[in-house]
Image (cartoon, rainbow, N blue to C red; front, top):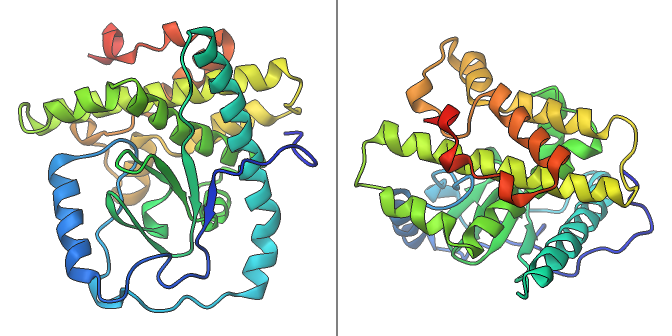
Length: 283
């Protein structure tokens, strides 16, 4: 992706090097309560994992090598965020609305959000409670070394996917999903969660469509995004971790589904074609 020298978003909180990624010392019990509430009520995007209560509040020392390694990547994700701001701002303006921009939080290891505690192990996530995207940039290394999803556009896809969850939060889709929690079976809720995630993939593809129209993409970018979508499909991740695939436990969609919906968004650029909730193939 052509990104060097281009506008970086100013809607970024850099919490790297802060105590516990911004967690308050002694906040373990409060964090646990927030986490349990979040787990019960649910939330859009990838939820934070259970916090390490005993380890909260310890100072994260800045690693010079890590800082240097992440410098370019932090600039890159800021450019990607800026591009999503421009695209969604334009689309909202065409509908006579004003786009409410999310904030990107960069952190190391652990972080506190309005949805509870998150960690590097939980991967990037979006919190509807504070309308922020949370990313530990070490996830980029994990994508390459553990998932085989290399290339800068793989990370661009991740950022655009989380912004997709922000769009779902703004338009009320996220609230509708959470209203189902407790009213339907776990398997049924998971099926709707899959539709939610696939729609976020579609919206990421719509952003890529507009990026291509602006001649920002380079050869191989879309293949990198599709490879990333393939690498994080539920079926592939389950097979990798346990050797078995349990469709009722899917929450994000299969590799084939994730690639399909990203590609559909990219090819059409038409947000009206991303109604995953009405797609009969997902019932």
